[in-house]
Image 1 (cartoon, rainbow, N blue to C red):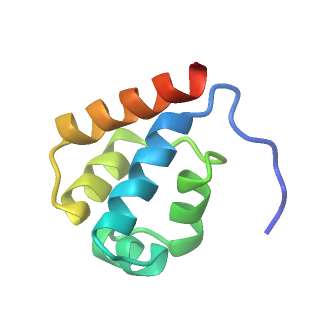
Image 2: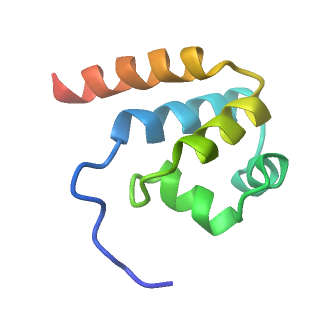
Length: 85
């Protein structure tokens, strides 16, 4: 695994929201990745803010977590706002 820099505009709020919801659902990154049909290392990079996910991947993660895209988006916005303060 290479240590490439994070995307130019990482979605830290989204990354943090996914991590919070995953832990609330008591899922490991591997288990969530499997439910979402994603590779575990890719999900780990998304959750750490090093990978900018596609909308399709965000939708699959939301479905795997049992939340709507709207709920995930709202939580991501809250988390992003918290980091900017």
